[in-house]
Image 1: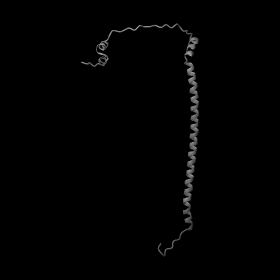
Image 2: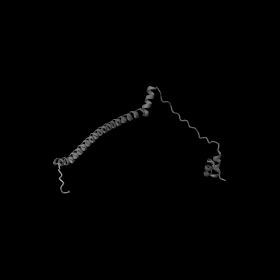
Image 3: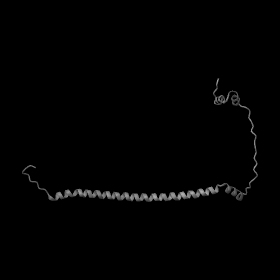
Image 4: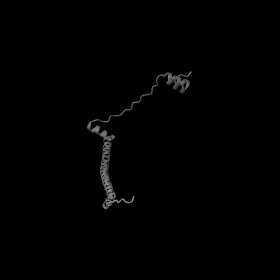
Length: 132
């Protein structure tokens, strides 16, 4: 500092300057605590919603099992037979088996080629290729 210059320094000014970082730190900590409180509240709300969804999943799973059991009871062959007999008045008739003899059709050109030259040639002829 140059000589001969007197500078008056306010003593309260130093106190105000030194208290500013503490105030900023206090404000920062307060903001962080409010933010953490918000996140805690949000996580509790999400946990409640997740629990409600899990309970509905359990409820729907048990309902599905009950419906599957009811469906299997309704579609069982004995149940269908008894319903048809009692409600519709149907009676079981005699079952006859009709056997149809196999009839060989007239030989086609592919069958003739197969018998003459083998199955490979008939495959070529079937897809339109000709071997000379």
